[in-house]
Each structure stands twice: as C-alpha cells, then as structure tokens.
View 1 (cartoon, rainbow, N blue to C red):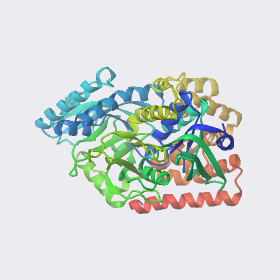
View 2: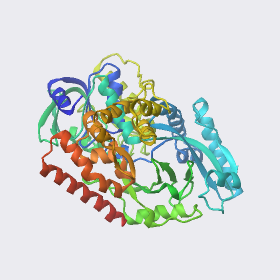
View 3: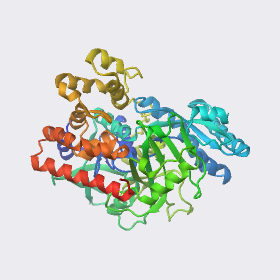
Length: 545
C-alpha cells in the first residue's frame, strides 16, 4: 500500500476511529481497533516512531527500579504495574521474535550486603514473572561474574544475573503499523493535525490535516478521535478543548554509543545506583554498546532534543565506576535523546499524586479520548484499554482484544536460521542474510528478490554497516520512508548508533531515494545538505569530534 493510496483513502472514507500519533501506543491502537472490526486511521506529524518510541533503552522490562520503589513505599499500584509489564515481555517477543529476544543482565555487587539485597530483589522479580519468566536469576561470585563480562572492574565482590527482553524499537513500531495496514487500516506519516471541526453538540467530527511533504490539506472524518501523542498530548487536548488543565510533564533521557569492543560480552550491565537515584544500563545493541539513560525534567520545544556535553560526561562517569578499563570521550561514536511523558494526576480527581501507570482520559466536552503515560513494554495493554473505551463510546459491542496473538509482519514462518534460505535460494552472503533475518524476518525474502532483480543492489552501503542498497529501495517502496531521516534513523536505526557512517552513506542513500521518489537533482542535493548539517549539530552539541 503506497502513501498516495493512503492519502486517497484518508480523504474519501469515513472512519470509526482516528488516532493521532504514530508511536508505539498509537500504532498499537491502530492494530487493535482494526483487528476488532473498527475502521481506523492513524495520523503522524513526522514519521512513525520518530519521537519517544525510537529513543528508548530498547528494553522490554517490568522495571527493577519500580519494583524497588513499590516495596520501599508499600505501593501496590507500582507493584501491579511491574507485574503486568513482566508478563507482557513474553507477548512482545512471541509476536515478533525477529525484533525482540531475551537479554541477560548483570547487576554488579560491591559487597556481600549488596549481593544479599539485589538477590532478594531479583528473586521477587522472578516470582512476579511466574510462568512468563525469561530466565531465573542467580547470584554469581566474582570469578563467575568476570567470566560472563570481563570488562567489569576487579573490585567487584559478585553480581546478580537476571533476564529481561530487548527489542528493535523503531522497527517494532513500524511493524505494528504495517500489520494494521494488512488488516485494512489507513496510516499516514508526515501529516500534521491542524484543527478540529465539531458537530452541533460540540463533539469532534472532523480533523483538518496538512500533508507536510506537499502542503496538501485533507479533512479526516471520524466518529471518535484518539490522542496518542505521548509527551505532546497536551497540545492535542488543548486543541480539542482549550479549557481543560494540562496533564503532562516531560523528562529528557539520553543514551550514548561506543564500539562493542569496549565490552566484549553479550551480557548487559545494570548499574544499580546513581547519585540522583536512577539506574544506568550498559547494553550490547546492533553491534555497538549503548549506555543510558539520564532523566532531566525539560520543556517541549519544536526541535529534536540532542545529547549535550555534560550528559556525555555524566554517563561516562558512571560507566567508569564499574569498568576495569575506563572509557573516554574519544570512544563515543553517537548518541540520542528522547522525551518521556510523565503523567500528572487529574487536578479534578481526588488524588493529586503522579499517576504511576497509564490513564485513558475522556474529555466529555469534546469527546476526545487521550491515552496518557505508560511505557513501551505495556503499549499493547494501553492500546487495549483505549480501544475498549472507544467501543463503549461508539455504542458497539466490545469485541475481545486479539493483539496478544497477532504475529507481526515478518514473524509468520520465522526461525532464527531462516537466513539459510536467503543463502541457499538467493545466493546471499551469510553476514548479509543474518542481518536481513534480524531486521525483517521472513520479509527478508522480498529484499533478496530485489537483489536478484538488480544485482548492484546487493552492495553494502558501507564496510562499517550491514545495510544494503536493496534495503533502501524496499523501505521506500514498502514502508513509506519519505526522507533520509526516515530511512537512516528509523528504518535502519543507524543514525542513533553511528554518526560518521551515517554521514558518509547519505549521498548514496539519497541517490537511491531520488530514483524511487522522483526527486530533482536540486531536491536531492538539498536533502543531503540538510541531513549532513543535522548530524554535524548532533556532534557539536555533544562535543564529539
């Protein structure tokens, strides 16, 4: 389904539900609604997963820190939130095993008492997981710890090994959208919600939308509107009803990337203590090492948040408390910053405490449904609660949610060794075949066919990257990638992990996109110039040479 087809459907059909926001929650709502028989459309201002949902720590987890707080504060709400998230891990992995998998993590202990404390906590984590466990935790002695992860300091006493999940967040997000499209949904990226039209009763009836690529204006008609814009939720809430109070606070989280050689292990590290009460993860990801995150309350702006020099120093400082060989600024090759939505309690409700989980809010004046708060691991439960509410307000029978059993595109027929099919049938190199299998699952066959049709598309974009020319063509033709950033930041994820390689391959990617999208030479040149300037700004802000 091409983007022009989606634009045509958006303008000519009437929908049961219009979802604003193309992150994990919005995409989850789209799939849930359409799979229950509702006619659904999704509108995204930038690109799918362009904001918070592609800037996560790439973990599917219950939240060790939340469990600790639940116990210390005797908070049953946080306890139940952790329990739900732990059980959702299995569902996320089962529904897209090419994009999500279990991940072993070590929590370093500097003393015997640390070992007792963290072992007790992780055993509780295990118990909450129940039959949905990804692996049982263990208390490892010093020798066992260093055998699992030799990068750790020799000053450690022991460690606790436990298991959570890891996912390719941006590709998982788009796979939700693509799966919903196969069910008959409509989805548009680079389309901005401008204003609502209301009916005689003051209820939302039409959303005026602008295609940011062409300037074209559309009227999207729907019976119900869902606000799933995460940190930007108040903007849509106030667009629908300027009289309601703001609900959202926003924090900025930063991750930095260093080469994988810094930590030669597939076992991640949870740094359990920071001076400001957070935890820091050191995680192998896509052939690199990811370190994060910070949390700083901030204000919404119109530009993309960036990694700043002081944040790089902060993260390096904590890593070096636990590494035998300190890392340096010179080893940082990329980074990314994202915004996290923090939900305040409804001022009109009895409780004034911060909401610990997510909330489905219905504005009775306008009829807008807002899904507020939450996190990646519980996106599916958030969507389920939201669409349950939509069904009730539409006056239709609430059909059961089936997204816990829907395999996403690329998952049907997938196996870890499916790459062998690409080697035997299409003659691909093993390294390329393995990469395609991890990124696209069984859809990798479509990319292999492109390589067969155009042998020059087999070429890697760079010796430092496994991505090929055929993938650029595929994501433009099949995944609505419209800009260089769509391809390199979201579909490939390369911008987030390797600034220098991203910069070097931009010209090649732009040439392929120009051929597919009919760009003029002037437009291609300007796209490259603007994207290069953006990467240079990232490096300058972080003071990375």
